[in-house]
Length: 308
Image 1 (cartoon, rainbow, N blue to C red):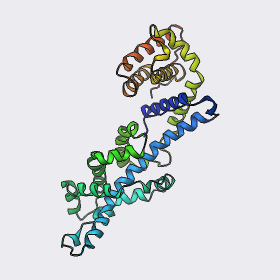
Image 2 (cartoon, rainbow, N blue to C red):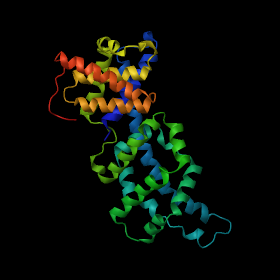
Image 3 (cartoon, helix red, strand yellow):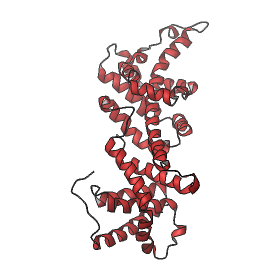
Image 4 (tube, rainbow, N blue to C red):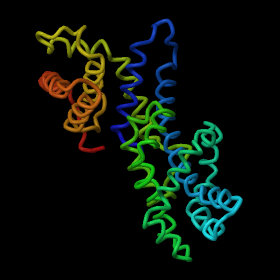
């Protein structure tokens, strides 16, 4: 489901948002409310991607209707194959109550662009994979699933117009895009394991909230550990994201005993490279390593053998 890396990104973004807010506007519960909103955006995107796959498949009926209504329809116009619109896996998604709740709650049915759907459908029809699918009169579950996977991986995910559409409608698309590729693939492999109303497990949700609240609560202590290691760096001029990632890393060292130290360091180096400056990964690696040595010397690091 949703990865710990993605959770760390959501926590980082929440902390950054709080850092830019007027203190007077931060009320009890503001932090967790902001975090919940960011996690909900991931659920929105996942639901909308599946809905987009469905709409492209269902466009076969729209195309058939339009072509048959021509003033002088050709034989081909009168015999458009609409098999994909009745795809059985497609209807399994549509019949999921949680999926329908998501569509209604966020008004996702109003987002698709009909002209974009037409272009995506025409791209699909032009492929050999689609022609092979409609040539088979059976409805084997494997082929029903495969054609929907193909719509996502080979049509939607490779369409610059569709990717721009996602970016225009979902502010967190750039952060979630890679994870969505995994989620969509996992869903088609084991749809029974997915709950559209709760894409994140309770364990990971607890981790997200605990990490967020711990960083907020222990901020001053973390800064006491970090600032002496900055040497010639002016802490006021260090990128805000870098400081937040270091605070998160220190909190994982101290207050999350089941997360291995190596995992913490590697994760925050990667996030620094992705979300801050080109030098941030190496910079954060050095600072966290120095803080870790101090904490180990003071016997303050207590880790269990369990890995997450």
